[in-house]
Length: 126
Image (tube, rainbow, N blue to C red; front, side, top):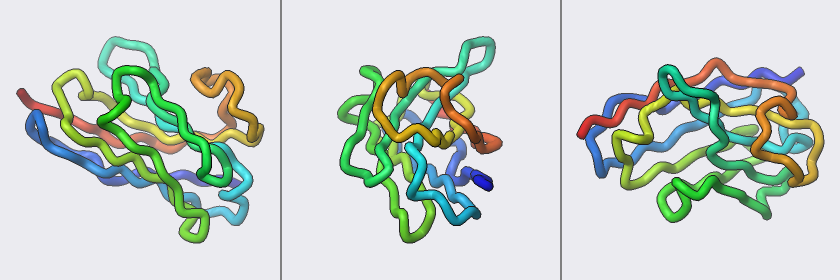
């Protein structure tokens, strides 16, 4: 069973950096494609980034390209989201998700992910 727990959120100023972590307490982490999503108040959940099972392929939404980096350490059952040059528009609850299907098709669709963490709040002040 996959159990995801995020950490690393907080209140920062514009231009600052944060690194989010998502740890899986299960034993099958390397078998899952991992994604990060975010949801701002009153808005739908949006795709942020995804990484393949091996970590060799990453995909980002346009608004975070060049600022965010997704990575994973399968030995530690953890996926990371390094966020640099944060802006107020990045304020949201960030959630990690695991998908049993490993192919990088429709990775932006949250409905295709099987497991979710509880989320961690990121607030960026201007």
